[in-house]
Length: 149
Length: 166
Image (cartoon, rainbow over all chains, first blue to last red; front, top):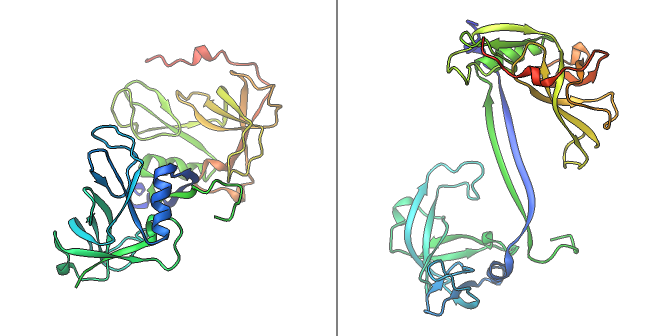
C-alpha cells in the first residue's frame, strides 16, 4: 500500500451530450433577429421591455408576444473580467462577461465585452455589438460588445 | 442547418465536459490487481462486509476498509435488464444483457455484461463466471472481463444474499 499514494491511477475523461432542441416561438424570433443584426425584446402590457426577449413576464406570468427592437448599443450594468480564458471560452484573449442593458430595454443581457483592456470596462459605460460575418441564428451572431470610444 | 427534415427552430446543442479522473487509492489498488487478472475486494474491519470494487471505506460503519480480500471470478446474477434500444456511440448491438453481478463472498454487486445465453433464458440467481480477454490485452479496466457467462451450477436463492452483520 505504501507506494499507492505516489502512483494513483489517472485518466482523462470526456463527457459529452449532443442533442437538438427547439428554441420555441419567442426565442426563435429573437435568434432570427440576431441573424439580421437586430436585437429583439418583448414588451409586456405594463410596457416593460425584456431583452433578450422573454417568453413570460416573471412577475405577472403574462405571455409576451409583442416584439420591439432594442439597442443595438447599451450600457454596462455589471461585469467580470476573464484574464485567462479557458479552452471552452469563445474568446481566447482577455475579455469580460457583462450584463448589458440595451437601449430601450428594462432588463440586462449577458454577453461578452472584448477588444479592450480591463481598465476601459466600467459600470455605466456605453458598448456596441460587433456582429459576426457568418450569422447562424445564434447568440454568437453577436461576437462580442466593444466599449464605445 | 443541413437536415431539411428538421424544423427550422431546432438547433444543435452540445454539452461537453472534460476532466482528469483520479482513481484514488482503493480503486487504484483494485485496478492494479485487475490488470493482473485478479479481483480483490476490501472488507470492513467492523461489520466484515466485502466490497468489490472497493471504495476505501464502509458506508455502513464509516471506517476505512483496509483488509484485502481476494475473490473468485464466479458469482451470480443479482438483477438484470435486457437492452433493446441502441445507444448512440455504443458498439454493442442490442439486444444484450446488463446485469448486476454478485461475486461469491462479496456483499455488493457491480454492473457488467452477460453473454453466451439467449436473452430470454437469463434469470436472477443464475451462476456465472467471468470470460476474460487474452492476457496481453489486460489493462487497468474491468473491460479485461469481456462478459460473464453462465456456468453449470445450481441457481442461488438471492434472498440468502442479504447482508447480515456478523
